[in-house]
Image (cartoon, helix red, strand yellow):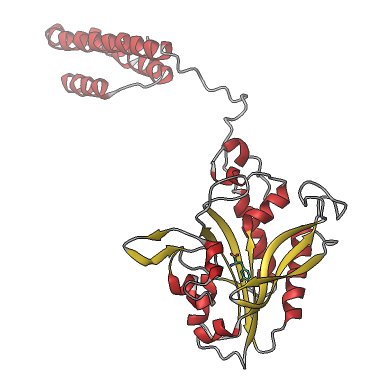
Length: 340
Ligand code: DAH
């Protein structure tokens, strides 16, 4: 009997009820009328009187201990409940899980990539911190040539050869240095210009460059590719128009306009009432550029183009201020939930 009391004492000590249910089953098991402790008192009555003395004291102690614990735990649980951990209301609507959305420029970039990938173009990447050769000289902008004037950028005084690229055309050179034709790639990325920031100009923006070099690539391929692209991007009834232009790295060069898909040529604010909007520069890769990367211009020809991603995005969504793209205002950004 003494042994039993000892182990019961240990058992009760080890119990830590954490809920009202556990506390109640503790009470039932040890202290209720049919519980272990009262039944030990019944047994006690049967014992001879010397043993009664011996066992009576520790049994009473056990009972007091258990009752004390019961009181203490009851108070503790009541206090915890009072601290207001209200039971969960499963009928309440869920806390909204605010997913972010893709940036509008990302949506446009994805769409452009998707269209050109279907035409067999791969996607290439190049550095934003560039040297003079890849950004200018290899692209047939000789030093001190006035064409450099249009693309002022940020230089480092101590290393005048290092600059922030002014266009994605540098990746044309990097790609042709590494790979031989046939070459078909588009090259999206960020570019920089030293320009005063306004609704229409920024010190950085994004372009997608395109390059196709192979035997017998002609101007008709350029035109057809960009026509196909424009119809996929802006709608099946889109028309394109090529205007003669100048870029040092293409000959001949052309500016690509698409028919205004807002007013369908009737004239509106977006197209400044001309019915056309400019989306890219383009042309046939200049033989000097091919020579700079050891590709024989007698054997290979190619076309190239460079498109402004901001431009296309502003047209797509009717956005009229370039600064909105980089201000990180969620009221602007969260409007572009649409999956491309
Ligand atoms: N790099 C030119 C610019 O930023 C755009 C451009 C024009 C790219 C003609 C081309 C091209 O590849 O063929 O103004």
